[in-house]
Amino acid sequence: MKAVLILGLMIFGITAVELESGVPILLKEIKAIKTEHTEFTFLLDLELSQGGKVSEVVSLVGDLLEQMKRDQLNDDLEYAHRTTTLGLDIEWLIIVLRNLTKERQDKNNQLSELNQIIVGLQQQLDALTEQLNILNGKEEQLRQTRAQEAASYQARQENNSKVLAALNEIIPKLQVAVFDQDGKSLLQTEQFEIVEKIKRELGHNHPVAIMVALTTKFDVSTVKRIIDKLEHIRNAVIALMKQEDEQETQSQITFQTAIQEVAELRERFSKDFEITSQLIKKRTNDKVLLEKRLTIINRDLSLTEQLLIQTREYKEQYDAAYAVRKGKRISEIKTVQQAYDLVENHAKKHKQ
Image (cartoon, rainbow, N blue to C red; front, side, top):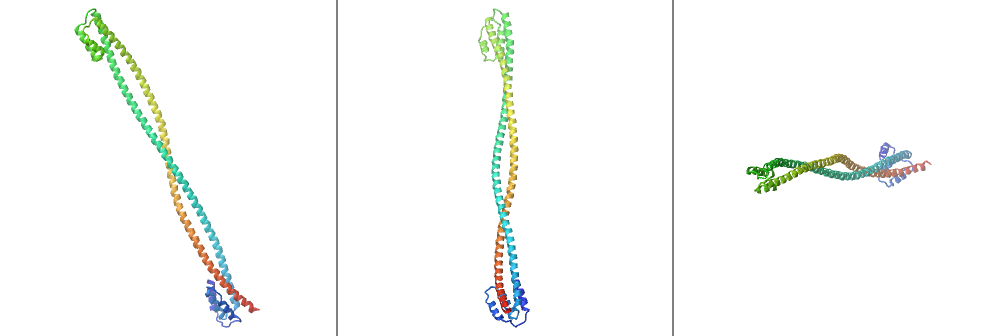
């Protein structure tokens, strides 16, 4: 109560002791005021008991009362402005908190969906990798099989060529021998050479070789039968070699077709692999950005929650301080108002 203290200083400067008419009664009424602010009533009592003029006291107390009311009005206006601002700040923080919470939930949902997409893409990539590996293995197997088939074909044809060459050599000799020895048996040396030649070229277990080896009489009719057998075999060898050539040609065509199919599948799978790899890279980058945003959101949420708590606490403290301050000032105003009414009524009565 700064104004009251100023009033007290003014009162202590008054030295007159002559009391105006009716002041003693007024002093009793002032002392009868029930208040916690006894310093004010004491100073007022001191002023009047020291001979201060009631009219001057009325003016001083009136000025004090008006100043206290203005102070309270200003405090009320300041409180209304400040508490409105704080209320708006709290509402804004609540909205920000709600938006951040919703955004965090949305981002977490997006992150979950993104993780599922990345897992699915990775599975596709793994499947494509497996398919490419299978194709590479298949191509390697095709090439190995083709090489084996080509080597086998080459060996068979070389063997067939040797047999054919031997038959082409043996048959004319037998024909010449039949012509020279018509009606006679072949000489033992000729028989031996022919038998060994047949065994060497056709093999010891070949039916013709066995038949020749078991033949004891190489007369013309017997040799003719052997020639017929050998010509039959030669024709069969020629047919076989032609068949082998045709099969080799078909095998090469089949091989090239299979290799082409593998190449086309590899190209398609490789494109899918590249596209899937790019998608995984893009989705992974999206995930990194999303996680960074979530980090910022969580940080902002924490800061906003703290600021909201602090703002609410400050508002509560500000409201409490204002309530205490206002209660005290209202009590002071009430006390001063009662004193003012007493001295003003006293002044009016004694003025008449």
